[in-house]
Length: 69
Image 1: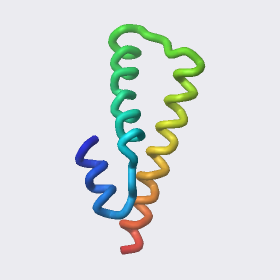
Image 2: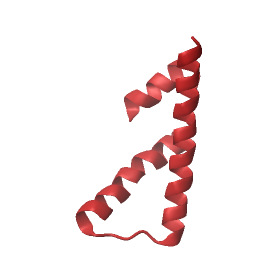
Image 3: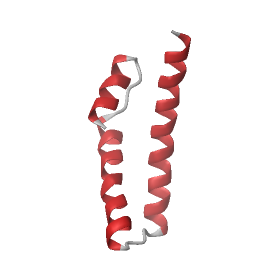
Image 4: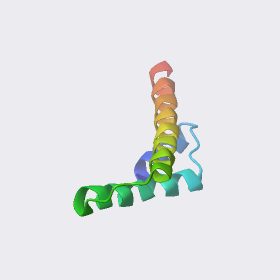
């Protein structure tokens, strides 16, 4: 994740430290779900969907910049 964020920054896509931290916490949720049978609450699920959507949009921006250069 750190390498991806660094690459994005070098190409002018800023991912705030807060968003980066939030995305890294998604791994914790993933592990709880896959290995512990955890079921996120509706609020947690909405939070996850929002964060993932923002991160995907940032990656799309990077991809678009990479295509045009």
